[in-house]
Image 1 (cartoon, rainbow, N blue to C red):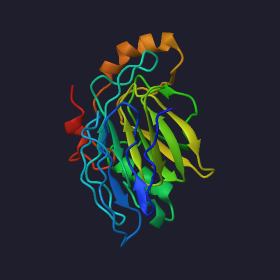
Image 2 (image 1 turned 60 degrees about the vertical axis):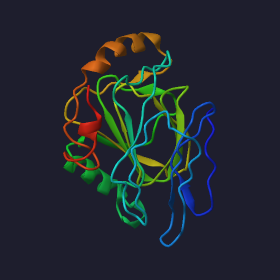
Image 3 (image 1 turned 90 degrees about the vertical axis):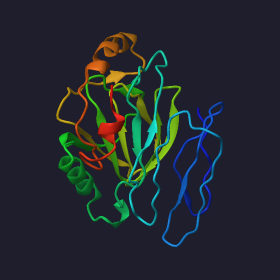
Length: 231
């Protein structure tokens, strides 16, 4: 299992670490008034990090981006990066964080097929649609990119945007872990398991055909997704 960067008191981990891969690690103060510093663990992140960091409850104005290669079982997406928004909403200040995330997604044209649940504990992906996952409550350790992918610590307020084909699974989670899932208007929901070669072979033909969204689920039409997701 990939290693995680260990936390520092008063700071929240954002980027995972994996042996043999160089990374940038960015940290943000967890509480107003806490002083923190950026910790650069290495020279370059294999998956490009596009970052503009803000503190004290403010959302990231740009996501971190990650590319995952086909691992032979999970295809991932060969062109489109995973987007990770840390603290997209200040969930702790919301009486109804579920509703806040649902409204955010719907306002930005990602309100199709919304659901409230968790994340499956087995590696899976969607080969005919892109997916947005907003963490409404709790926290979890989630692996993205399939069995050889990266492990992320996700918490309430974070949003992850998965291009079609991206493997994901929950490894550990708090009892109150709750996710809002949503999709753009174009595409068809399907579920593929990371241990089914027949599904993978078919997925390789459908993933490149999934339409590109016109809007970012967090920042709308003027957000970074339409610029970052290009074929």
